[in-house]
Amino acid sequence: MSTVVSELIDRFSDQFGEGRTLAHVHAPARSEIAGNHTDHEGGHVVAGALDVSIEGVAALNGTMTARVASAGYEPFELDLSDLAPREDEKVSTAGLVRGMAAELAATGREVQGFDLVMTSDIPGGSGLSSSAALELAVGRVMETLWPGSPVTPTAMAQSAQRSENIYFGKPCGLMDQLSEALGGIAHIDFADPANPVSEKLDFDFADKGYALCLAYMGTDHSVSTADYAAVPGEMQAVAAEFGCTRLCEVPAERFDERVSELRAKLGDRPVLRALHYYIENRLVVERFEALRTGDIDTFLDLTRRSGASSGMYLQNVSCGGNDQPAMVALALAEHLLGDAGAVRIHGGGFGGSIQAFVPLDMVDFFVRGMDGWLGEGNCRTYRIASEGAYAQWL
Image 1: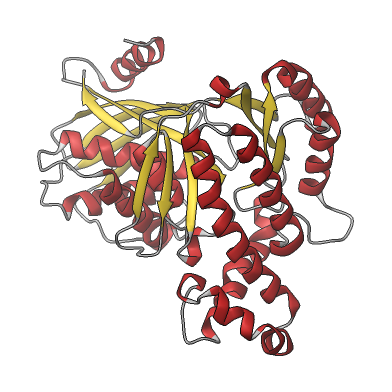
Image 2 (image 1 turned 180 degrees about the horizontal axis):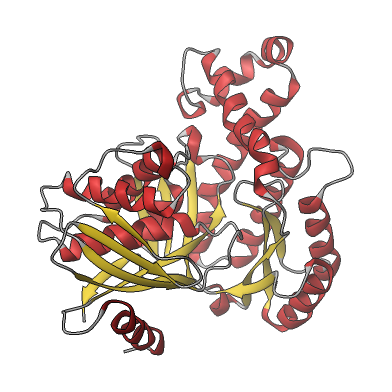
């Protein structure tokens, strides 16, 4: 038993008392390895579960109330007798818990009250999808505490997505939840959103002489909400010109035939963002194949091309003006690495985080340099975690 789990058991006893059978839950964070803004268009992504996670212990309490205590946050209670969405629980952990309870109840389980204590070492606001990890942790706890048939990783991820969409109020895609549910590195094809096709790969960048580093800019995500929303909005505006809802439904050859017409009608940026989709979607497949064959040099070359496409065509690195934190971070990272490794925007973009694949003998130098510019602790290394979200009896 790990030290973290032992400490959680002690906290559970202090908070809720002893004498009950406990379940342990683990839900990792994730990093987008390839596929920048391709998932919402029905494209391909490669994502990896990381070695930071939410850990928790839980037990039934014989009531219809969920009592949740998470390190660093005020504990709360939730009446599980009513599982309808509530406006006053939007953008809250309580909303996610209620949403996951509704989803697990829909599998035929009997809803029962429980006590849950959690802790997390996922850096806050770092773009590693701690919200998806929370959804999956709560979902796996309920699956274990409430008897019923096992829930597949894909089904649990879809439940988590619906909870975030409906109960939390965020129109997220499925990549975060599915990659954290699967574990390891996974190639995911979202052409059929109801039945995404996934393939896991056992791969460790360290075995090839590189570390996965993420650097966080520490900016306020809320100021970029409209910028984030404009990316899928403009891509789907292009798709609509072909009578489609997503770009995956529009063959590249048909798009090519109408570029001039689309520019005249929609403007240049939607056309550029559509071009990024076609370029990046192809690069995802090529990068996964490079990882499958262990060709790290090809993977790094394609990563640099992916980063250039995001910056130049997708344009989720800079909106112009005096504030360009992601562009500064990318430039600083390239300044440190020179011709070694590769860097790219990570996740949604704008002011979130950047990703770097750094030679192992340069890691300390790179992290010190980035921290010196961005702030202590804003750059760190991560390893790929083989296990996805799970819960088990202790």
